[in-house]
Length: 390
Image (spheres, helix red, strand yellow):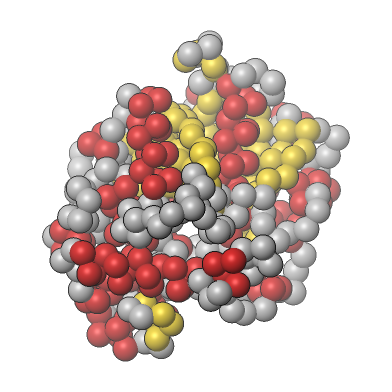
Protein backbone atom coordinates (compact mmCIF):
# COMPACT_ATOMS: atom_id res chain seq x y z
CA UNK A 1 0.00 0.00 0.00
CA UNK A 2 1.33 3.43 -0.98
CA UNK A 3 1.12 5.80 1.99
CA UNK A 4 2.39 9.38 2.41
CA UNK A 5 2.15 11.18 5.75
CA UNK A 6 -0.25 8.49 6.93
CA UNK A 7 -2.48 8.90 3.86
CA UNK A 8 -3.00 6.44 1.02
CA UNK A 9 -1.89 7.41 -2.46
CA UNK A 10 -4.83 8.27 -4.75
CA UNK A 11 -5.03 7.77 -8.52
CA UNK A 12 -7.27 9.08 -11.28
CA UNK A 13 -8.57 6.07 -13.17
CA UNK A 14 -11.40 7.44 -15.31
CA UNK A 15 -12.42 10.71 -16.95
CA UNK A 16 -15.52 11.92 -18.74
CA UNK A 17 -16.77 15.18 -20.19
CA UNK A 18 -19.36 16.58 -22.56
CA UNK A 19 -18.80 19.43 -24.97
CA UNK A 20 -19.57 22.69 -23.21
CA UNK A 21 -22.30 24.80 -24.79
CA UNK A 22 -25.93 25.82 -24.31
CA UNK A 23 -28.33 23.05 -23.28
CA UNK A 24 -31.27 24.63 -21.42
CA UNK A 25 -33.66 21.97 -22.69
CA UNK A 26 -32.29 19.13 -20.52
CA UNK A 27 -32.14 18.67 -16.76
CA UNK A 28 -28.90 18.95 -14.79
CA UNK A 29 -28.82 15.20 -14.17
CA UNK A 30 -29.35 14.48 -17.87
CA UNK A 31 -26.57 16.92 -18.69
CA UNK A 32 -24.16 15.21 -16.30
CA UNK A 33 -25.03 11.57 -17.00
CA UNK A 34 -22.95 11.12 -20.19
CA UNK A 35 -19.83 12.47 -18.45
CA UNK A 36 -20.37 10.13 -15.47
CA UNK A 37 -20.96 7.09 -17.67
CA UNK A 38 -17.86 7.88 -19.75
CA UNK A 39 -15.71 8.18 -16.62
CA UNK A 40 -16.98 4.84 -15.28
CA UNK A 41 -16.45 3.13 -18.64
CA UNK A 42 -12.94 4.52 -18.91
CA UNK A 43 -12.18 3.24 -15.43
CA UNK A 44 -13.50 -0.16 -16.45
CA UNK A 45 -15.79 -0.50 -13.44
CA UNK A 46 -19.49 -0.55 -12.75
CA UNK A 47 -21.30 1.53 -10.17
CA UNK A 48 -21.09 -1.17 -7.51
CA UNK A 49 -17.38 -0.40 -7.07
CA UNK A 50 -18.05 3.28 -6.31
CA UNK A 51 -18.31 4.05 -2.60
CA UNK A 52 -19.19 7.74 -2.84
CA UNK A 53 -20.36 10.40 -5.28
CA UNK A 54 -19.44 14.04 -4.76
CA UNK A 55 -20.93 16.81 -6.88
CA UNK A 56 -19.90 20.43 -7.33
CA UNK A 57 -22.48 22.91 -8.63
CA UNK A 58 -23.39 26.52 -7.93
CA UNK A 59 -26.94 26.85 -9.22
CA UNK A 60 -27.90 23.22 -9.81
CA UNK A 61 -30.40 23.07 -6.99
CA UNK A 62 -30.63 20.73 -3.99
CA UNK A 63 -29.40 17.13 -3.95
CA UNK A 64 -27.60 17.36 -7.29
CA UNK A 65 -25.38 14.36 -6.52
CA UNK A 66 -28.40 12.26 -5.63
CA UNK A 67 -30.27 13.33 -8.76
CA UNK A 68 -27.25 12.50 -10.94
CA UNK A 69 -26.90 9.21 -9.05
CA UNK A 70 -30.50 8.36 -9.83
CA UNK A 71 -29.80 8.98 -13.52
CA UNK A 72 -26.64 6.81 -13.54
CA UNK A 73 -27.36 4.06 -11.02
CA UNK A 74 -25.12 5.43 -8.26
CA UNK A 75 -27.61 5.29 -5.41
CA UNK A 76 -27.51 3.90 -1.89
CA UNK A 77 -23.98 5.22 -1.31
CA UNK A 78 -22.42 8.26 0.33
CA UNK A 79 -23.46 11.36 -1.61
CA UNK A 80 -22.52 14.97 -0.92
CA UNK A 81 -22.90 18.30 -2.66
CA UNK A 82 -20.51 21.27 -2.71
CA UNK A 83 -21.11 24.92 -3.50
CA UNK A 84 -17.92 26.98 -3.46
CA UNK A 85 -18.53 29.30 -6.41
CA UNK A 86 -16.24 28.52 -9.36
CA UNK A 87 -14.21 26.19 -7.12
CA UNK A 88 -17.22 23.96 -6.40
CA UNK A 89 -16.20 20.79 -8.22
CA UNK A 90 -12.51 21.29 -7.37
CA UNK A 91 -13.65 21.41 -3.72
CA UNK A 92 -15.64 18.22 -4.26
CA UNK A 93 -12.50 16.63 -5.74
CA UNK A 94 -10.55 17.67 -2.65
CA UNK A 95 -13.06 15.92 -0.39
CA UNK A 96 -13.06 12.76 -2.51
CA UNK A 97 -9.27 12.72 -2.44
CA UNK A 98 -9.26 13.04 1.37
CA UNK A 99 -11.91 10.34 1.81
CA UNK A 100 -9.89 7.84 -0.22
CA UNK A 101 -6.53 8.89 1.23
CA UNK A 102 -7.90 8.44 4.75
CA UNK A 103 -9.35 5.02 3.93
CA UNK A 104 -13.02 5.96 4.32
CA UNK A 105 -13.77 4.71 0.79
CA UNK A 106 -11.70 2.96 -1.86
CA UNK A 107 -13.28 4.48 -4.95
CA UNK A 108 -15.26 7.69 -5.52
CA UNK A 109 -16.79 9.59 -8.40
CA UNK A 110 -16.59 13.38 -8.62
CA UNK A 111 -18.83 15.30 -11.00
CA UNK A 112 -19.15 18.99 -11.75
CA UNK A 113 -22.20 20.28 -13.58
CA UNK A 114 -23.81 23.64 -14.31
CA UNK A 115 -26.53 25.19 -16.47
CA UNK A 116 -25.96 28.93 -16.60
CA UNK A 117 -28.29 29.33 -19.58
CA UNK A 118 -31.21 28.75 -17.22
CA UNK A 119 -30.24 31.88 -15.28
CA UNK A 120 -30.54 34.27 -18.21
CA UNK A 121 -27.75 36.67 -19.14
CA UNK A 122 -25.64 39.35 -17.54
CA UNK A 123 -23.14 39.30 -14.67
CA UNK A 124 -23.68 36.83 -11.86
CA UNK A 125 -25.64 38.08 -8.84
CA UNK A 126 -23.39 38.14 -5.77
CA UNK A 127 -26.23 38.73 -3.31
CA UNK A 128 -27.79 41.71 -1.53
CA UNK A 129 -25.25 41.78 1.31
CA UNK A 130 -22.30 42.34 -1.03
CA UNK A 131 -21.79 46.11 -0.87
CA UNK A 132 -19.17 46.11 -3.63
CA UNK A 133 -21.45 44.31 -6.08
CA UNK A 134 -24.39 46.51 -5.11
CA UNK A 135 -22.29 49.51 -6.13
CA UNK A 136 -21.44 48.10 -9.54
CA UNK A 137 -18.34 46.01 -8.90
CA UNK A 138 -19.37 43.04 -11.04
CA UNK A 139 -16.78 40.45 -12.06
CA UNK A 140 -16.04 42.09 -15.45
CA UNK A 141 -15.65 45.45 -13.71
CA UNK A 142 -13.37 43.98 -11.05
CA UNK A 143 -11.06 42.35 -13.58
CA UNK A 144 -11.06 45.50 -15.69
CA UNK A 145 -9.87 47.40 -12.63
CA UNK A 146 -7.14 44.83 -12.13
CA UNK A 147 -6.07 45.22 -15.75
CA UNK A 148 -6.07 49.02 -15.54
CA UNK A 149 -4.01 49.01 -12.37
CA UNK A 150 -1.54 46.49 -13.79
CA UNK A 151 -1.16 48.55 -16.96
CA UNK A 152 -0.55 51.63 -14.81
CA UNK A 153 2.18 49.97 -12.75
CA UNK A 154 3.86 47.67 -15.27
CA UNK A 155 4.72 47.30 -18.94
CA UNK A 156 1.44 45.92 -20.32
CA UNK A 157 -0.57 47.00 -23.36
CA UNK A 158 -4.10 46.15 -24.57
CA UNK A 159 -2.43 44.20 -27.37
CA UNK A 160 -0.63 42.02 -24.86
CA UNK A 161 -3.93 41.14 -23.19
CA UNK A 162 -5.49 40.44 -26.58
CA UNK A 163 -2.69 37.99 -27.34
CA UNK A 164 -3.84 35.85 -24.41
CA UNK A 165 -7.28 35.59 -26.00
CA UNK A 166 -5.68 34.73 -29.35
CA UNK A 167 -3.78 31.89 -27.69
CA UNK A 168 -6.91 30.62 -25.95
CA UNK A 169 -8.85 30.60 -29.21
CA UNK A 170 -6.05 28.79 -31.04
CA UNK A 171 -6.06 26.06 -28.38
CA UNK A 172 -9.83 25.87 -28.18
CA UNK A 173 -10.11 25.44 -31.94
CA UNK A 174 -8.26 22.13 -31.45
CA UNK A 175 -10.49 20.98 -28.56
CA UNK A 176 -13.70 19.11 -29.49
CA UNK A 177 -15.08 19.83 -25.99
CA UNK A 178 -14.70 23.62 -26.27
CA UNK A 179 -17.71 25.91 -26.43
CA UNK A 180 -15.92 28.28 -28.83
CA UNK A 181 -13.90 26.71 -31.64
CA UNK A 182 -12.86 29.63 -33.84
CA UNK A 183 -9.56 31.47 -34.05
CA UNK A 184 -9.21 35.25 -33.86
CA UNK A 185 -6.54 37.86 -34.45
CA UNK A 186 -5.31 40.51 -32.03
CA UNK A 187 -7.17 43.11 -34.10
CA UNK A 188 -10.43 41.15 -33.87
CA UNK A 189 -10.06 40.81 -30.11
CA UNK A 190 -9.47 44.53 -29.64
CA UNK A 191 -12.35 45.52 -31.93
CA UNK A 192 -14.89 43.16 -30.35
CA UNK A 193 -17.68 44.63 -28.21
CA UNK A 194 -16.39 46.66 -25.25
CA UNK A 195 -17.34 45.21 -21.85
CA UNK A 196 -15.31 47.08 -19.23
CA UNK A 197 -12.23 48.94 -20.44
CA UNK A 198 -9.75 47.57 -21.41
CA UNK A 199 -11.63 44.24 -21.64
CA UNK A 200 -13.66 43.38 -24.73
CA UNK A 201 -16.11 40.53 -25.22
CA UNK A 202 -13.42 38.23 -26.68
CA UNK A 203 -11.48 38.67 -23.42
CA UNK A 204 -14.31 37.42 -21.20
CA UNK A 205 -15.41 33.81 -20.70
CA UNK A 206 -18.74 32.87 -22.30
CA UNK A 207 -21.96 31.89 -20.55
CA UNK A 208 -22.78 28.23 -21.00
CA UNK A 209 -23.56 24.77 -19.65
CA UNK A 210 -21.37 21.74 -19.12
CA UNK A 211 -20.44 18.67 -17.11
CA UNK A 212 -17.28 16.70 -16.36
CA UNK A 213 -16.53 13.71 -14.13
CA UNK A 214 -13.60 11.70 -12.80
CA UNK A 215 -13.21 8.40 -10.95
CA UNK A 216 -10.67 8.31 -8.12
CA UNK A 217 -9.37 5.16 -6.46
CA UNK A 218 -6.77 4.14 -3.91
CA UNK A 219 -3.53 3.56 -5.81
CA UNK A 220 -3.08 0.08 -4.36
CA UNK A 221 -6.28 -1.20 -6.02
CA UNK A 222 -5.86 -3.20 -9.26
CA UNK A 223 -7.89 -0.68 -11.28
CA UNK A 224 -5.43 2.07 -10.31
CA UNK A 225 -2.35 0.21 -11.45
CA UNK A 226 -3.14 0.07 -15.13
CA UNK A 227 -0.82 1.74 -17.64
CA UNK A 228 -1.53 5.45 -17.88
CA UNK A 229 -2.93 5.91 -14.38
CA UNK A 230 -2.35 9.41 -13.03
CA UNK A 231 -1.60 10.10 -9.36
CA UNK A 232 -2.74 13.03 -7.23
CA UNK A 233 0.54 14.50 -6.02
CA UNK A 234 -1.00 17.42 -4.13
CA UNK A 235 -4.46 18.66 -3.23
CA UNK A 236 -5.01 21.98 -1.51
CA UNK A 237 -7.99 24.23 -0.84
CA UNK A 238 -8.01 27.52 1.01
CA UNK A 239 -10.16 30.63 1.36
CA UNK A 240 -9.45 34.29 0.95
CA UNK A 241 -8.56 36.53 3.86
CA UNK A 242 -10.92 39.33 4.79
CA UNK A 243 -9.28 42.69 4.27
CA UNK A 244 -11.07 45.89 5.27
CA UNK A 245 -8.40 48.16 3.82
CA UNK A 246 -7.46 48.51 0.17
CA UNK A 247 -5.91 45.47 -1.49
CA UNK A 248 -3.28 45.14 -4.19
CA UNK A 249 -5.21 44.72 -7.44
CA UNK A 250 -2.12 43.46 -9.31
CA UNK A 251 -1.55 40.29 -7.31
CA UNK A 252 -4.16 37.72 -6.20
CA UNK A 253 -3.34 37.11 -2.54
CA UNK A 254 -5.24 33.85 -2.17
CA UNK A 255 -3.57 32.21 -5.18
CA UNK A 256 -0.08 33.27 -4.11
CA UNK A 257 -0.69 31.76 -0.67
CA UNK A 258 -2.43 28.63 -1.98
CA UNK A 259 0.39 27.98 -4.47
CA UNK A 260 3.06 28.41 -1.81
CA UNK A 261 1.27 26.03 0.56
CA UNK A 262 0.67 23.48 -2.20
CA UNK A 263 4.28 23.43 -3.35
CA UNK A 264 5.49 23.08 0.23
CA UNK A 265 3.12 20.17 0.86
CA UNK A 266 4.57 18.00 -1.90
CA UNK A 267 8.09 19.27 -2.57
CA UNK A 268 7.19 20.26 -6.13
CA UNK A 269 7.83 23.73 -7.55
CA UNK A 270 7.06 25.64 -10.74
CA UNK A 271 10.20 24.29 -12.45
CA UNK A 272 8.84 20.74 -12.09
CA UNK A 273 5.50 21.46 -13.80
CA UNK A 274 4.95 20.78 -17.50
CA UNK A 275 1.53 22.36 -18.07
CA UNK A 276 -1.13 24.39 -16.27
CA UNK A 277 -4.89 24.81 -16.46
CA UNK A 278 -5.69 28.04 -14.62
CA UNK A 279 -8.72 30.20 -13.92
CA UNK A 280 -8.62 32.50 -16.96
CA UNK A 281 -12.15 33.89 -16.74
CA UNK A 282 -10.69 37.10 -18.22
CA UNK A 283 -7.43 37.65 -20.09
CA UNK A 284 -5.86 39.67 -17.27
CA UNK A 285 -6.54 36.77 -14.88
CA UNK A 286 -4.23 34.40 -16.77
CA UNK A 287 -1.46 36.99 -16.73
CA UNK A 288 -1.84 37.52 -12.98
CA UNK A 289 -1.71 33.76 -12.42
CA UNK A 290 1.55 33.41 -14.37
CA UNK A 291 3.05 35.37 -11.50
CA UNK A 292 0.94 34.15 -8.59
CA UNK A 293 1.73 30.51 -9.42
CA UNK A 294 5.44 31.26 -9.53
CA UNK A 295 6.19 31.09 -13.26
CA UNK A 296 7.24 34.74 -13.45
CA UNK A 297 8.19 37.46 -11.00
CA UNK A 298 5.62 40.09 -10.08
CA UNK A 299 5.33 42.54 -12.96
CA UNK A 300 7.13 40.28 -15.45
CA UNK A 301 4.36 37.92 -16.54
CA UNK A 302 3.88 39.73 -19.84
CA UNK A 303 7.25 38.38 -20.96
CA UNK A 304 5.80 34.86 -21.02
CA UNK A 305 3.04 35.73 -23.47
CA UNK A 306 5.29 37.92 -25.63
CA UNK A 307 7.85 35.13 -25.86
CA UNK A 308 5.28 32.43 -26.65
CA UNK A 309 6.30 30.53 -23.54
CA UNK A 310 2.70 29.72 -22.53
CA UNK A 311 1.66 28.46 -25.98
CA UNK A 312 1.20 24.75 -26.69
CA UNK A 313 4.79 24.49 -27.88
CA UNK A 314 6.16 26.83 -25.21
CA UNK A 315 8.17 26.23 -22.08
CA UNK A 316 5.09 26.12 -19.81
CA UNK A 317 1.81 25.75 -21.73
CA UNK A 318 -1.14 27.41 -20.01
CA UNK A 319 -4.71 26.32 -20.71
CA UNK A 320 -4.13 23.93 -23.62
CA UNK A 321 -7.87 23.18 -23.49
CA UNK A 322 -8.66 26.77 -24.46
CA UNK A 323 -9.33 27.55 -20.82
CA UNK A 324 -12.39 29.24 -19.41
CA UNK A 325 -12.09 31.84 -22.17
CA UNK A 326 -12.73 29.31 -24.89
CA UNK A 327 -13.71 25.91 -23.46
CA UNK A 328 -16.27 27.85 -21.44
CA UNK A 329 -16.97 28.41 -17.77
CA UNK A 330 -20.10 26.67 -16.49
CA UNK A 331 -19.10 27.42 -12.92
CA UNK A 332 -19.54 24.11 -11.13
CA UNK A 333 -18.11 22.08 -14.01
CA UNK A 334 -14.89 24.01 -14.60
CA UNK A 335 -12.72 22.57 -11.82
CA UNK A 336 -13.24 18.96 -12.89
CA UNK A 337 -12.97 19.90 -16.57
CA UNK A 338 -9.48 21.24 -15.81
CA UNK A 339 -8.56 17.99 -14.07
CA UNK A 340 -9.88 15.95 -17.01
CA UNK A 341 -7.70 18.00 -19.36
CA UNK A 342 -4.57 17.64 -17.21
CA UNK A 343 -5.13 13.88 -16.84
CA UNK A 344 -5.59 13.30 -20.55
CA UNK A 345 -2.60 15.52 -21.38
CA UNK A 346 -0.41 13.48 -19.04
CA UNK A 347 -1.67 10.33 -20.76
CA UNK A 348 -0.89 11.73 -24.22
CA UNK A 349 -4.51 11.60 -25.37
CA UNK A 350 -5.19 15.15 -26.54
CA UNK A 351 -4.48 14.87 -30.26
CA UNK A 352 -3.69 18.10 -32.06
CA UNK A 353 -3.53 20.10 -28.82
CA UNK A 354 -1.26 17.60 -27.07
CA UNK A 355 1.45 19.29 -25.03
CA UNK A 356 5.05 18.08 -25.37
CA UNK A 357 4.79 16.46 -28.79
CA UNK A 358 8.35 17.67 -29.40
CA UNK A 359 9.60 16.19 -26.12
CA UNK A 360 10.71 12.56 -25.88
CA UNK A 361 8.99 11.84 -22.56
CA UNK A 362 5.95 14.08 -22.90
CA UNK A 363 4.43 15.95 -19.94
CA UNK A 364 4.85 14.31 -16.54
CA UNK A 365 3.39 16.82 -14.06
CA UNK A 366 0.42 19.15 -14.47
CA UNK A 367 -1.25 21.74 -12.25
CA UNK A 368 -4.95 22.65 -12.11
CA UNK A 369 -5.85 25.97 -10.46
CA UNK A 370 -9.25 27.54 -9.92
CA UNK A 371 -10.51 30.32 -7.71
CA UNK A 372 -14.01 30.64 -6.34
CA UNK A 373 -16.07 33.75 -6.64
CA UNK A 374 -15.81 37.23 -5.31
CA UNK A 375 -17.37 38.54 -2.14
CA UNK A 376 -16.96 41.81 -0.30
CA UNK A 377 -13.58 42.20 1.40
CA UNK A 378 -11.96 39.12 -0.14
CA UNK A 379 -9.53 38.77 -3.02
CA UNK A 380 -11.44 35.56 -3.83
CA UNK A 381 -13.69 33.37 -1.72
CA UNK A 382 -11.73 30.19 -2.40
CA UNK A 383 -8.74 28.79 -4.27
CA UNK A 384 -8.08 25.15 -5.14
CA UNK A 385 -4.86 23.77 -6.59
CA UNK A 386 -4.29 20.16 -7.58
CA UNK A 387 -1.03 18.74 -8.91
CA UNK A 388 -1.20 15.52 -10.91
CA UNK A 389 1.65 13.30 -12.04
CA UNK A 390 2.30 10.32 -14.29
